[in-house]
Image (cartoon, rainbow, N blue to C red; front, side, top):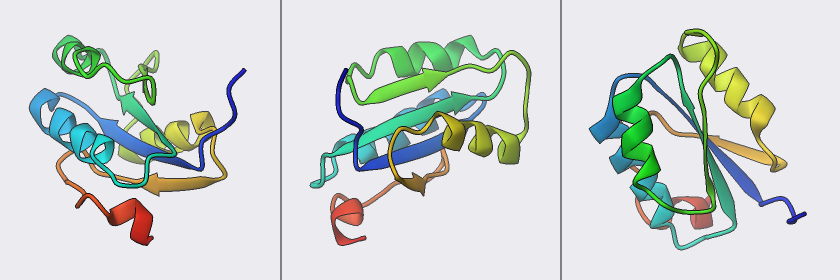
Length: 104
């Protein structure tokens, strides 16, 4: 069993494969590296799931709920799945500068 990461980054998404891929890459490029990314694909969305599968990194976890939750409940599900004591939220259509987590 691996030790928990310092920060869990929660990203809810639905039907935005290109945007969420960019958002995830902006997290993967952080100067602070002790994090996990929990992406909640809010509904059956094969294109988004496939795009995330292409981003091979052991810090990335993708969760697909049984039903569409809506943005707030998708965020809450991500928090429930988070393994770190600190949680940071990122919208699927946003990007982080490389030093965001380190400075925060």
